Image 1 (cartoon, rainbow, N blue to C red):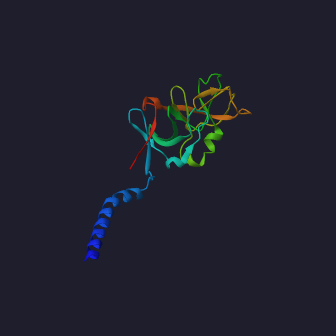
Image 2: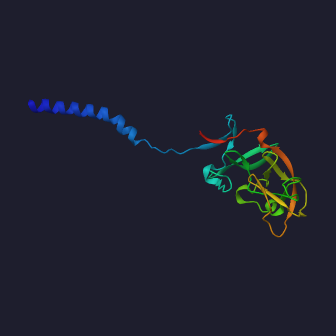
Length: 195
């Protein structure tokens, strides 16, 4: 009899222990890292700029922007044209430099015909764009224009104007301003994950 009472007490104690411990062990089994299905870039007002192309695996190192490790690419519909741009915390960028015949990055910006004709694999179906002043204006090649020999005196890339790095002088395609993205979005930008 004592054995059955002792067995019953042990069973009750075991059942109580399992009920008390199970929620903690179940929560300990939950994964601490979860996959993220979608990442968007939003501006300081919460306005969605765009969804990152392909997730964070398609980011580009940004060596010229202090304290930034990558600038994710997003796809935008700007004035009815699809364009891909990169976004840092404080603004928009492009892989392509803009070239000028002036010494201070003023006047007509040009894209090299190499940038226009040999697209990087990621953006092969999209037009080459450059981003430069004023603000973060998107420049696209003028349609049906042919390459011209240029006397390049300045180059604008990732927010900086400097002396050109190309030798010999390239041929280029004139560009036209599509839109200043600063008129649509307000930095600083941040990432937001969502469904």
